[in-house]
Length: 76
Image 1 (tube, helix red, strand yellow):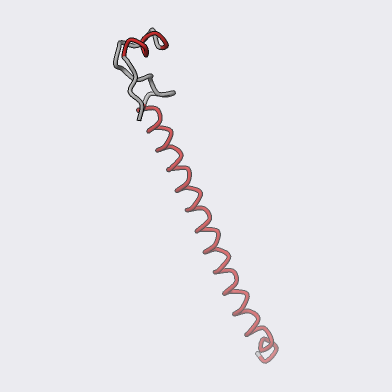
Image 2 (spheres, one colour):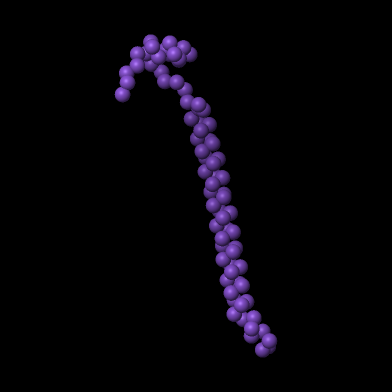
């Protein structure tokens, strides 16, 4: 751990009062907003994948059922 003199820091960061750390690249509020938007987009993507997977499973079940009963259609 390094100890830095506040005056020395203020020479390199003249816009900051002594003893303060440099600001983040974005204010935290905007970072949280981006994170929430990304999380919502991820959730939506997972929902779509789940729906597509369920649809494919249902179609596969229908196809299997048709494959079983198709040979007996001529008996009607």
